[in-house]
Length: 236
Image 1: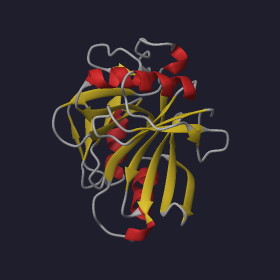
Image 2: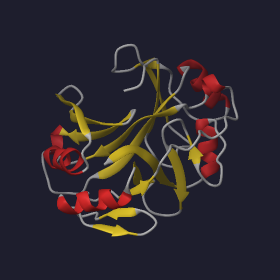
Image 3: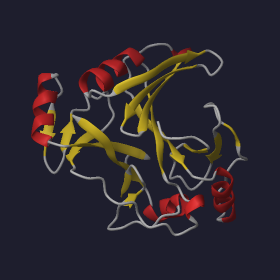
Image 4: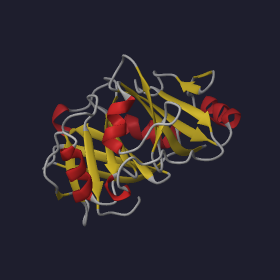
């Protein structure tokens, strides 16, 4: 049913993300190698996920059989009751749009999205929805008391939908929250230096949790979205 994550909607300025990603938006859409960004006003900083499907009618029928209410318009919007509070829609897409042109050295620009983070107070509920109803592939389920979290990784084309659960807060029926983004770059050091030179507050480059990876955190110019940049790894 779902073939990719088509785009994410953010509140705030597209020009800020042009600087962050090192790419120029085209017709209001900022496209990386595997996902686009669109921009709205108001609402949460990271306000919606839109998945791509090859056949919207078939997806609507399948979701209905799986007990997910939908509303059909330009996209197929899923009931937030079914999604546990995360705004999710589907769009019919035959081919992925071409990446937006870079405005910086390609090695220092963001190439693609690595993962999008959803915070959930109920990981078993999240598994039932993302795997059982959306049909995404659960690749990893790991609890780590040292991090204080349980992480669920759902493969979606060449990126991951990461569900993060705070172990210290226990289980509840509270809503999930679309929360943060991790971007891939070809060269972590050059990307960090570029952003720092542009006046963006970034941490030093450090080793990531995945073997061989390097990461740094972006602490400003993200329009309120927790943001990590990662390099030194292949695709999922």
